[in-house]
Length: 397
Image (cartoon, rainbow, N blue to C red; front, side):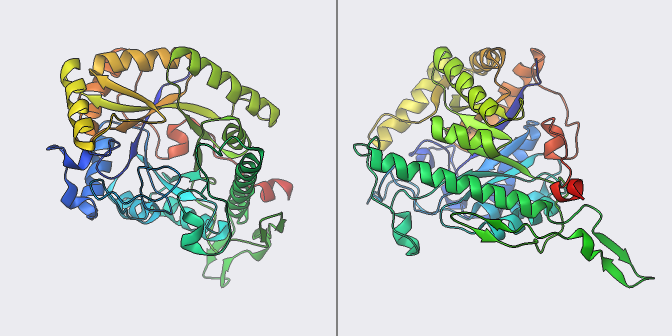
């Protein structure tokens, strides 16, 4: 069996909408550098493989499909890529994985930004790509028209076509980003003072990508990242995003709610990987939203107090777990036994549940022989057991 990987998803004060009102939260610090460097340091103390930093191009809303008028939940966030660039130099081992929206941004800029993050982090950069187009995003930019989405319209043929096109666009976007990362060969920089040659122009390549959404000539203006290709991840809930992950990602986050669902999702993802012509190259992680306490009743009571403050029971795309570290470790072991490469934990309240992951959950997993006791690679790809790929253009040459 492959080694278990453990990641954490960071978002504001935590994944419960009322987390900022918890006595364990630090809402006045959400937009401070110290808050984010502290969270990354805590995750690294727990030896986690990487931390994702959530983001979107629309303001948070209790309504998934449209803005709301609520003032009792966290609204506003910092740019995940810029936060990643700030916290990366202050860490030494953990992977840093910001979220980037493909629908309203340019792949050339994103490729350059992520290559820079890989240099800043000395080879520990990744990215979680997401599609946009919901919650009024298009109107914020004014560059394209997208239909209004709602739960009632989601399964109509027209909306399903729009969704499929957004994910096809995302696949091309990621393809462009990856090609730009490869557009400099690893030894393109000569830096030879004696011959006055800093680069070998023959080792910079145009990518000449032409598709429905993008026409990008290249090459990049940033040399090839230290990892060659920073780790690409996506969150997926159904066949269309599973297909995107199978075509373009190194890691996919999925959201099973029980053992039967976990098996069904894993089987479907594997079928898509085979259809994409890949051979076990995609790692699958299960997302879990967690509230951890030494006593299960206390964890449940803490979640219910937050539900009461928010005025509604917590709803999530991911399974919600409230209990002890021992019980969570048992569930994680079951997922790993089914064939999952890892789990990504969404702390209900930050930093409280992140600290519980480091102090309680990780030692339990270590005692069970499921999780490592030290970092053993200097790069995120190495930590995940992913080979450093050669540039496709160097191979062709």
